[in-house]
Length: 369
Image (cartoon, rainbow, N blue to C red; front, side, top):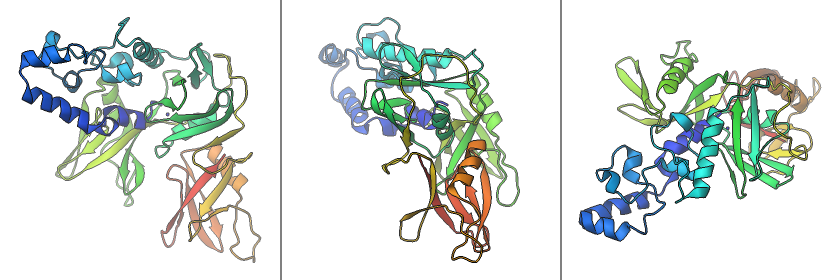
């Protein structure tokens, strides 16, 4: 969701996606055996395996290395840099034909731009070509939220489809997913701070502007997806490392992500539609309802639906779930105010919280589909 997903980018460059044991095993092998022994013992078992050192930037064995000198993400089919990747992508190789085809499809999705008037388009591929996902504005709206990791789609021709935004893949099924756009997507950058995603460029609680703006970060990212963006706050220097998708300073490291700014979907002709409309979608394990319902978390962890309660009643409320849904569709990245028993609250769609404006106490909210 790249709208690769920021989480997609974070996954591509995060060591958490690959077991540290495999990296350490490779280092141990290199230390315990001679160069000749390494080559002879790995000549067979390393076929089709990407070279870890090449992917880190340098392999001292060069052409003699029995590991593949290709981007390991391209071989897995989830390289988000596409044609701008600094590493080699396989073209017509036979060692990993399935992975090669997946990598080429991923690279193609990064290069293809929509020319039919649509802002974006989500597609699935079951091996018989890419098909447009109907009602994909719901997927797009969730993908635009930095805290959303994925979405489950129910009642499709393929059953339940679980799309993960981090790796931009479908889990548990032999399906591929991609997001195309018209090349005019505005990408926003976020930093994880106190369990919330804060957008670069927003003013802080004191009204001070951020020293780093999403537009500046995106410009640097587009010029070199493997470089970094540096800025200063006072005497402290911060570096956003695109490969790692982390903001690093001398004191700490924070996650960053990149998500598109939501644009209202436009109807247009495109790739073939999937056979059925999605009747139910869900972001969690809760059974989806026919109509989107907004809920808040109570004191004991139970969830309650937003309902209008008349003045004078206990816990009177000024808005309903449908009121929230209307505002959410108008601006999924925005917020709205409402009152409960005379107290003013703010609903933050991006953070999925409601905050009492007097006490600053926050509760979780959710949207059931």
